[in-house]
Length: 99
Image 1: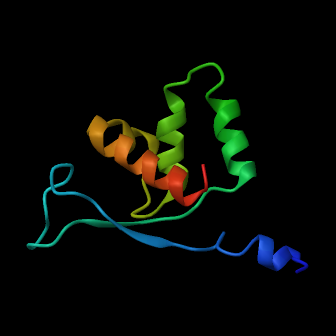
Image 2: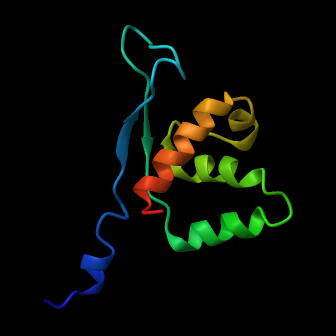
């Protein structure tokens, strides 16, 4: 079977609804908080790695910034998140990205 570029790139525009466990974010209106996340492409991942070269603590923050589609989050907001929430988001974004 021969693959073409659209087949190889399939899923890169995918946005996934991600439910956040209640131990990381309390439910709102009785329902788990849901964020929208997307996979990262190699270009974005390379930029994150380059930015984190001098400060590796930036890498997980930038992964969250680039991977979370909704709500839009900036670095100061991400820096205020619980460590466990950032860890959870990083794991989910990496898995979605095939890492």
